[in-house]
Length: 506
Image (cartoon, rainbow, N blue to C red; front, side, top):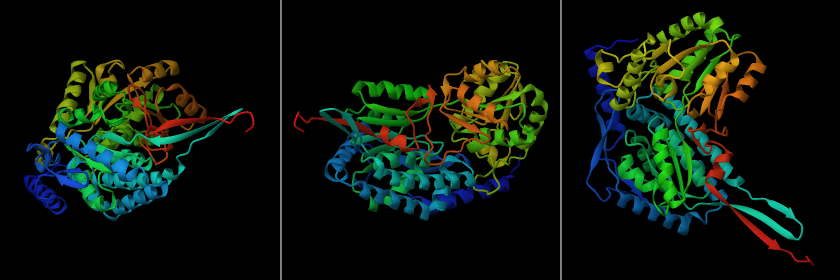
């Protein structure tokens, strides 16, 4: 791993500060409600921290229940007066314009994601590219929301898909702008208006994007209120005038969202946690499998709900695989995420660092072997930021807390297997079912794994690939519903059945 001197630290801090000054306003970031930028009902603000430097990036206003009320009212007024009457072609045109505007400033938004979240610039650019692609995908999908006719003798039965009206959306901090687009694009394509709360750790890119596109959105169609979960998110998900709620985040918080939505019988989409297995088959080339495993685990510094955090390696090739895997990790460069050569950036906050270190401590307490990493960086900018070393844990039971609970940091658990049925039982013996992967050249083995693993997304000889059009969502406690595909439009519409009695003479 790279080391950084005090001179390097000062230079990196200056670089980040200069970039922030060029991309962000000097004062606190305001809410965007009804087409206006407002401070809201209170004067409270909070800091968004740059996780690379540990310094404040920008101040942001803390939303309140009154601000949520105002945003919901603005969204309903926009829906009833402007957006409900927009044709699919008009909605499609707006989404294409949103995509064009994002693409035109793609590099600026990628750099904002780096400042706010800490992800390496190479990955941030991929996020923006995917966000543009999803806007364009749902622009096309807007023209394909169709009902059907149901033959029934003298009765003529037809169905319509209609929007909910106002949708409440809460997005996480690990892919701030991309996951906001994942939710905004299908909601708008389906004809809804939106009240959206970004994560309090990473609000900058979405608010900046709204400044970029506010001229092309009718007032109130998209409203953004910033703040914490308790102060801002809770009033949104429990609001009696929000009939549909979409949330991405931890399973624990998702359970609370589900309970709150139950009070108003609101429909929900939940994309929650994961503890995904990556299974290395006996025939897999160890070097190739190691490359896939590194990408599956350490992409986005491990802050990815679908990350391949449990490696099941066949015992016949375990020694060779582990050598290749550890060697590949050793080639990763940890450092300033604005540096083109950086592979591993910081975690998003000190809170996440402490959580990750807690789980590593539990592994040590269980007498597991820490094959690599296990701590924080201790030199220069790495010590000042939220950097955790890529960590590999071995010789730990598959039912240990470290191997069954989501850590959401750069921590891999290595498990060996011999018997297929036992391995599948262990792979499935967690509360989550978001994703899984397999590395093999045996097509029969790949199909067998895909059928036997209880997860919503199975990757074969790749991982974390999510093109627009691929449904994404989980089994078990990993969520409800699907995102990123045509199926998502059904999550943002309701079915209306129309039955006509044609009579004997018709």
